[in-house]
Image (tube, rainbow, N blue to C red; front, side, top):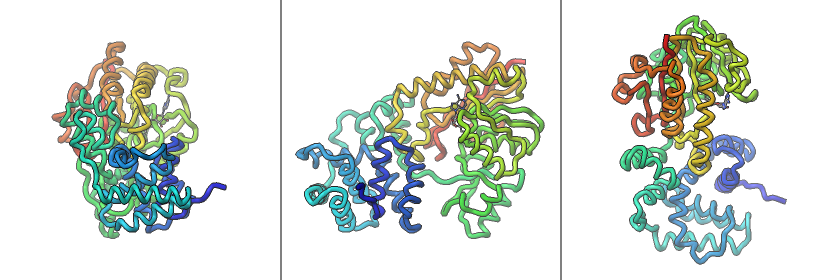
Length: 449
Ligand SMILES: C[S@@+](CC[C@H](N)C(=O)[O-])C[C@H]1O[C@@H](n2cnc3c(N)ncnc32)[C@H](O)[C@@H]1O
């Protein structure tokens, strides 16, 4: 019979093992593990820190460990993970005494394996303690060094260095290791940023104004999703970069808007809010279960102008009349390399083949929605990735085969002033270290009149 994990660190090993087996995204898995193992409220923060931290720094931790495992026979996946979480705590979590880390590691090794494995784990950790960690200076190749130091796959670092240069890539890789702040978009059909800011502050919730978006409030402590303001529909958890999309689309009251890839509804609801509950937002997504999420968000925010529908957007031409939408948003499925801070597993699971497949899908979605836009209508294309092949290349290819569309530089006036210098040719690529947001891409196009 499979032994059940019980201590926080054992739950961490189990969670990471399942992430490794590619069974689920770390964020979703962590939530279900917390429930399954009834992790105490006070232990959730430590568990989260160990799981995310270990995953974020997996390549670095393996580099630290490699020299100490040279003589070992092939070790089982769970033993490697146990060693990783132990080294992670030793190196990155000051407040945990080493004896506690060693004791727990040995107990877990005994429970999951046997005394021999426990002695091996203890031996490796004691050697690390005695001999210290290897330095990154031993890695002569600069891309490889950056990849290991910041725990990203080399192919990705190599690609980014070619796209952005070494310095920008280094800054981005370092920021990718930092936990993101929590931001919320204020539902301005019901309140204002100032009103909600004061309301939350009066209730003892520490908040700050956003760094980039005028719709944003930043949670400095606690979880804004657990506030009364959230249940009353006064706010939506959303990264500041995502809040720029509905602004760039600039929907007007009474218009008909298509959100082509809408679940879980973050941008549809913002568009609907900007339209003050008037007009219609047709919110499509491929999967019925995801469409339900859009409905839930619309209900929570009491927005009645959203029509969610399960549909493959590539078939939208069979469902909607040509030139029947005033504005269209394609917030496309993408590799997600801009949200590595939130979903560290992305950097290990996505590969170049995925990027090319996604670029193809993105192009096909754009092709399908293009005829549905009215003349003089606005088409916004966005992704939460920083990959040129999924962003500016997709837009360029689309424009080459659609001379009826032009880049819309004029949309810059709907975006924050801080973005104006980098919004060029109707597009902007945000990197995570620019404003502390997710890495995000937005392109604004217009159909000729
Ligand atoms: C980046 S997410 C959208 C996020 C959403 N706009 C928001 O702000 O909450 C991309 C979405 O596209 C959906 N998708 C992927 N392929 C699709 C297709 N062919 N047709 C419609 N939706 C698709 C995915 O299910 C996913 O929910």
